[in-house]
Length: 315
Ligand SMILES: NC(=O)c1ccc[n+]([C@@H]2O[C@H](COP(=O)([O-])OP(=O)(O)OC[C@H]3O[C@@H](n4cnc5c(N)ncnc54)[C@H](OP(=O)(O)O)[C@@H]3O)[C@@H](O)[C@H]2O)c1
Image 1: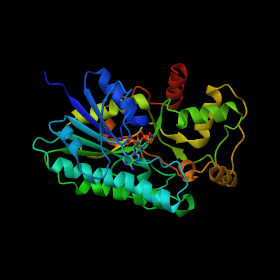
Image 2 (image 1 turned 135 degrees about the vertical axis):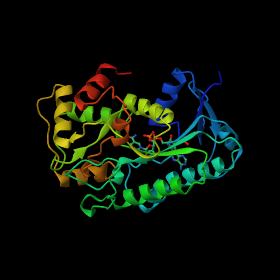
Image 3 (image 1 turned 30 degrees about the horizontal axis):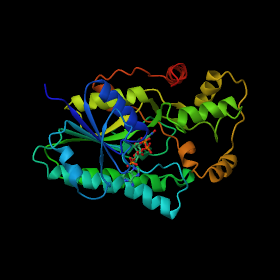
Image 4 (image 1 turned 60 degrees about the horizontal axis):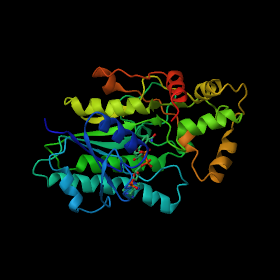
C-alpha cells in the first residue's frame, strides 16, 4: 500500500506539531515545510521554504495526499504597523504561493486545508454562527477591524487559487486548548491559580473553543470526507460565556476566588503584555455546522470535560 503523505506548511508551531504527531502515529509520512528546520524533529521530515517564492520545496507536493497550511505570524501582539504587515503577509503570501505551486503540479494533492479563523463572524450575543453565516462586519467597540481584514484577504487568496483538481477547505478554527507553552489552557490555569481567574470585561462574551485532540481528529475527518469543501467551523459544539469559562478554570485548580478584570484593567494589561484586548473581548459564538451534519463525534464536547482531560494528561 502507498504511504499517505501529508505536507504541513507552518508545521513547526502548536497546531502543526500536534498534527505531525497525530498523523505520524497513524503511519502517514509527514513533511513539514519550515523557514527554520529543527534537526531533532522525529515526527516529520523537514524541508525549507520561505513561504513566499517557488523553489525545490514544490516537489514535495507532487502526489501528496493532503496539504495543511498553518503558516501565520502569531496574532498575540500589539497591532503596530510592522506587526500588521507581518500578520497579513505571513498568511496571504504562503497561501498564494501554495496555490501557485499546486497549479503547476502534474499530480496535485487531493485535498488542501488552509488555516483561517472563526473570528471571521460578527461579534455576537445572539444566535450562534454556523458556516451559513455571512455577516463578517466588524465591531469597532471590540477592535476587530484589522482581524477581519486579514481573514478576508487570507480566505480570498485561497479562493483565488486555480486548483480545480484539489478539494479546498478553509479551517475556521476557534481557540484551541492544548498544552503548548503560553497557549490558552496553561495561561488561564495559571491565572486562576493566582486568584486572578475572574470574569473578563462583562464576562458575557461567548467563547468558542476546541480540544487539540478533536482538532486533529476533525482535520483527519475532513480529509476523508470528499463531500465537504469550502469553509468549515472547527469548533466544539458547546461554546460558553467568558464568565462560565473562568468559573470552570477556578473549579479546575480549586481556587474559590478570582479577581474580575474590568475593560480598562484589560486595556492596561494588554498594553503591558504587548497584546490586544480583542482576543478576550470579542464575542465568538461559533458552532461546527458541517462537522456535526457529516456525523463527526467529538471526544471532548464540553469545556469542563476538555480542561479536566488536559489537566489529567499533563505532558
Ligand atoms: N492556535 C489556535 O488556537 C488557532 C486558532 C485559530 C486559528 N489559528 C491559526 O492556525 C495557524 C497555526 O496556529 P498555531 O497556533 O500553530 O501557530 P504558531 O504556533 O504560531 O505556528 C505558526 C507557524 O507559522 C509559521 N510562520 C510564521 N510566520 C511566517 C511567515 N512569515 N511565513 C511563513 N511561515 C510563517 C511558523 O513556522 P516556521 O517558523 O517553521 O516557518 C510557525 O510555526 C495560524 O495561522 C493561526 O492564525 C490558530
